[in-house]
Length: 428
Image (cartoon, rainbow, N blue to C red; front, side, top):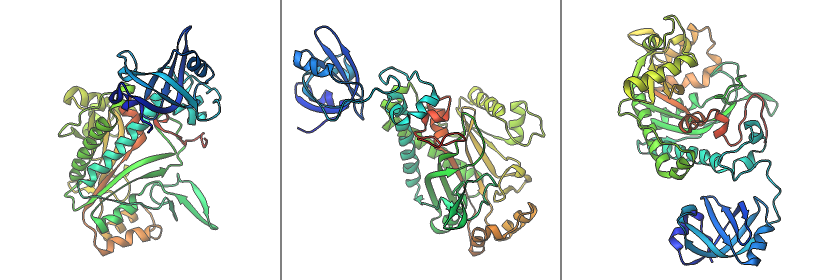
């Protein structure tokens, strides 16, 4: 008899089936025992009224892996509207040790540090695993949206020879006796691959050795990167980002509907045209001084409230950040050279995406590095490619964990990360 999943049970009413999973909870009453089995798809309720079956259930412990052969009966009050009766229960391993917290409760009562210390068990909780299902669907949507636009998926090195792309906050390591570093971004490589495929994307880890100890920062996170050639300016990149986000959210709604229900989440609509404000206007909206060089978290929250109030949008673009706050490869605004053709996308008042148009002429790179007092040699392998013809191009990067946390309403990005790495945590 082939094993079926809990979600398939309604299609088998009246039949004898085999299910398997973990003992999620037992309820032992005087004349009957209820056994809740958890599998990858959800929960199934087993009713053991026969004395022998009840005795078998009584011997089980939570999280023991079992197999149940039983008859499917329609019962509206049970999970999925069915329950399993006349069961034969067979453990598939020894009795499980009790978990450090109750997994059958609607929410984990343990503190987040305790959950993270015991992540392999905590992630079994339906709410924790639901967030990871949302993340998986978001990545699938990212890939599908860009595949449909003729992007090519690439895979770039995560160990690099120099720490040039974002400054000194990198993780150093020994590479066969030579210094090396964990990559902070695939930025340089995805630009170079525009010269090969025109449109590229990557899903992969990035590493930031920044001593942030906040609810929204990780030392390793998953970056969803895209880069496209032959753009007019950064607004072409913003248009692709808008469509990509819409595709991601549509896929989340389609593939992770049950997970969204578990979390009580409704997927927001992406406007056909996401509202956009220039950095100088954003400062005024947020009530910040006109000479402020960047947006603080409080400013981002104020902009999120403004976008929701004035445009009914959970998303807002901030364009034209000062060139002094953007990497050297950022293309300046031709009309206002002190400002960039770069942007951030805020989602519910939090920076989610950074992107923009890049320089594409070799001489412009030499001038940009000279203006910042930087030597060309550390960037030689990157800058040299622009001698051989590169189109106007740009791209963006989405932080997956931050996106999921904002979508599901998690207070801390670690709540939606399976095994987070941060300033304090390197295990499990």
